[in-house]
Each structure stands twice: as C-alpha cells, then as structure tokens.
Amino acid sequence: MPPLLPLFPQTDQTRIHLETAGPGTIDAVPVVDRARCSGCGRCVAACPLRIITLDSIGHRKCAVIVSSEKCTYCGACIPACPVDAIIISRRIIS
Image (cartoon, rainbow, N blue to C red):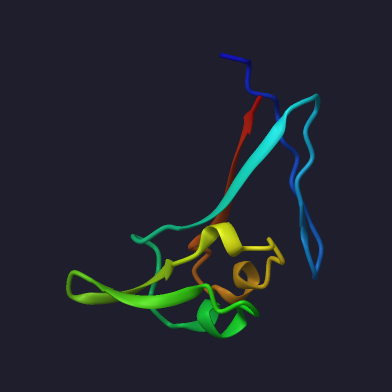
C-alpha cells in the first residue's frame, strides 16, 4: 500500500482546491456528519447541482448527499452549513 501523502486544502469562495505534496490521485467525496447536522436545509438550497437532500434519520431530518460522484467540489454547501457538518473527505490512491 502506498504511503498517504499530506494534503493541504485551499478554499476560496468558488471552488475547493485539493493539492498533494507528491504524486498520486485524489479520491475526494463530500461527507455529512450526521451527529452535527441540524437538518436546516441550507446546504440543500446552496447546492447548484441539487445533489444534497434532507432525509429522515431516526426521529430527525439530516442532510444526505445522494450523488457524490456528480459533485464538482464547488464548496457552496460548506459555508452554507451553520454547524460545520459538511466536509470534503479525501485520500490518496495510486
């Protein structure tokens, strides 16, 4: 298994940039922390591709990313979330 390389995310207002400190392919997916999500729906409204929806998880609503493969990593959902429940999870694959 190849070693994991450190990643340095850089965020601006329009796009998330992922950089590696060496060679490799980035596998990045948006992830919702269900324990933090308040179900407010701001991320749903912010997503230009409409790949985020609210779903019932137990007795409460929670954001669910239904098509992560269609995500363009525009980053609109991240600042829209008032409880910081959305992150871009990333890893290096060879």
